[in-house]
Amino acid sequence: MSNAKNTSESQSSRESHDSREPQEPHEPREAQNTQSANERRAADGNRPSPMEVLRQARAQLAELTGLAPESVSSFEQTDDGWALEVEVLELARVPDTMSLMASYQVELDPEGQLTGYRRVRRYERGRADPRGGR
Picture 1: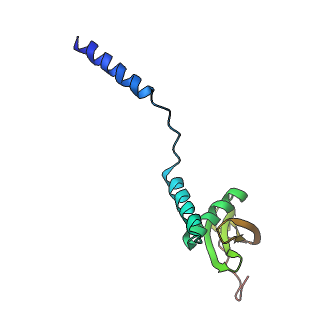
Picture 2: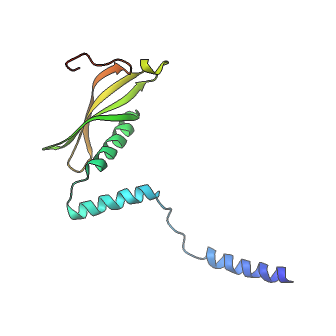
């Protein structure tokens, strides 16, 4: 008999739970944090921090090219926004020192949105630049 009581209480509890309005699916916490930070910044009229710009640039370049950025070799704030040079793995080879890497020049507006990119060089991972530059 106690089982019947618990079952009916469980059913009524479940029904009251089911009768609630469905909730919207939640975004991942990281996306919520980024979104709220971006919204606060937009409301304040502030520019993104350099670390926010780096993260956005890497993510946007990866989405556009399908290549995963490995490092950022240069980064500077310009009159028009931001300029970065990002190193990506273009073709994996064995041994790894023979893999083909590429440097991409990436330009972003003052808010950190990518406005353009171009590949500026390709090289083997294990090969050093000649003395004096590229």
